[in-house]
Length: 157
Image (cartoon, rainbow, N blue to C red; front, side, top):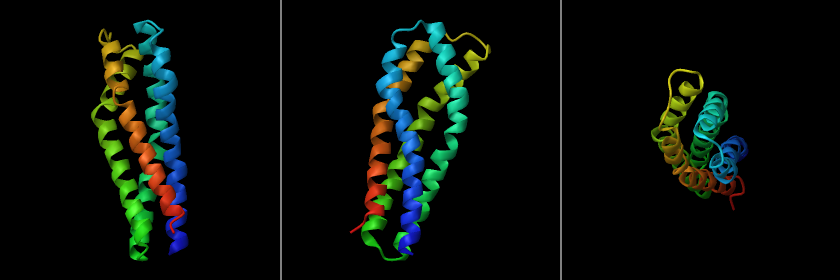
């Protein structure tokens, strides 16, 4: 059972690393870059980024959470206390990430995507993007916490 939860934890690390990297890149590169474009360009770029990103990144995000949950359950069943606690921390962080993402960026992403598709103007695009950017630090931190906890799970003493 030890090998099983470690394999699931590694799968969770790899999957969530994709999401972490995307959030980190957005916080450190995309956010400051958007400050130098006009509102129309912001809508077109971010609307089209989210048209693809929100669909394609759902798979690694979902797989990562499911692997973390499965690994945590397997570690608990094997009485691997350190790994089970680390997995619990990881799962809590990943679920918290999902809640924050669905509450703030996801609805904004849908509005930007619709506007980029020509389904209406979005005069408040800059304010919406600032609101979405405002939670990037939280999202990055939650993903980092999840990844560190999953690494503890893999390398448990």
